[in-house]
Length: 178
Image (cartoon, rainbow, N blue to C red; front, side, top):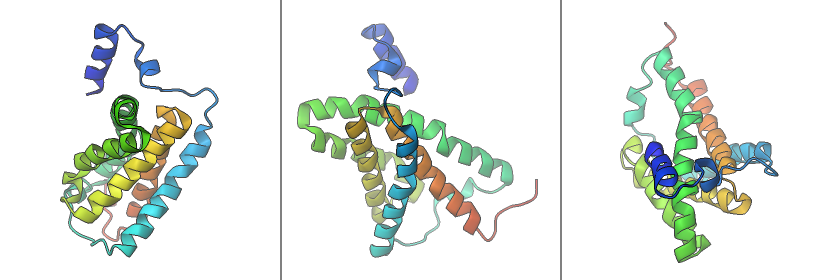
């Protein structure tokens, strides 16, 4: 998808890739937005508790069967995953929807397909999908407020890191043999 975006922006429109997707660092306090990730995660957990979100078997747990898989999944979930997802959803899709439907609608309409993308990961649990939609809306708000997809990616990355670290530190059957 990112390669398609690159080709579309570069070849079709002759535009710079990073600039077109609002990947800005200047005057953006990425540390502040990275610190926002755990806050969003805490809010999502609190709402999940209020909704009595069930602890269920999920397809993602199958990927966490050995230490190498755990490390790779953790790496991708906290680096490339958030960057690619934010480039597609908040860098490309959000500005299109915000221009045509307004900022609030753009945030929500971008958060919905983001949540659907994660549906299989959470066995299509409606509570989990709702929580991911709200997290996606938070990332969209960060993108709108800062004007930077990089800030949204920093928030998304540390949001994922918070859940990943919490998951592995609380996992009783964590594989330890290499």
